[in-house]
Length: 320
Ligand SMILES: Cc1ncc(COP(=O)(O)O)c(C=O)c1O
Image (cartoon, rainbow, N blue to C red):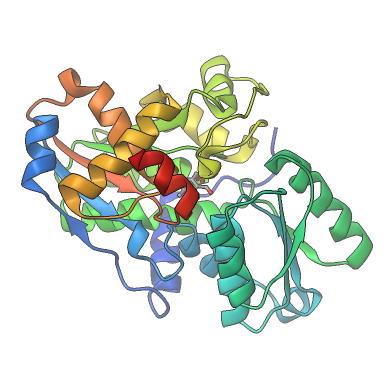
């Protein structure tokens, strides 16, 4: 179990003030074609329009903004399948901090190039994210940098929760928020924000059935590892993060698994119905809403479209 203090709704409110000078609120759009498809009043939160193309940047800026000068001088190291790494690289550049990002071999080239463009040192290590994560901890010990966990960091969770806070500031009577789950920081932040506004707002987590570690851990209320073979690298973790899990155990209302072919189909649906580019993890919430079509009829729902950093190869797979 994580020893860290759990972040709170107040921390999300504080994060919202901290990130305001650096990030504009992202658009919340409605598309008649999506309403018709789902039989609901659907609001899409466009985190794919963030400067790095994903919601993670909210957490990275909140974390780096709170670091002491001494911590910043050490530099930061982290492991990522892409968007968390981009977030830390982007925020590190903003605050003049050196960053090293460990990524799995074969990481999404669009994300790797973006990290480099922000000045990060990118190190390839291991076949899967979980191998990169272990190597990041080694670099921390060897080089004295500050290791940033992609899940077990209160400031990251509070930072990313601001996406849901923005949804509810604009549409306070949204009844359900659908949020993707990889390590669980985004969903934990969404829970803090939603339950802080009203305990009646339901938060639904969505994970790939081909990487269900967080789902199994949530279901069993105990750590569970699982296979990690999903095409959606944003959702690809084999081991759970226990800090966000503790929040999810308390506050998450439901947890849906979707198959990889549903993720790819949802990317295509976003292109056709909303003229917007989602990566498979970002489209997961649409795939889940389609699965829950009966339960959402007539409801006012928000889908967190968490990112749009799809590689050309993935896009071809979706269209093929
Ligand atoms: C686009 C996208 N969506 C969802 C997630 C999952 O977020 P979390 O790890 O906070 O659960 C990620 C993680 O990198 C991501 O990149």
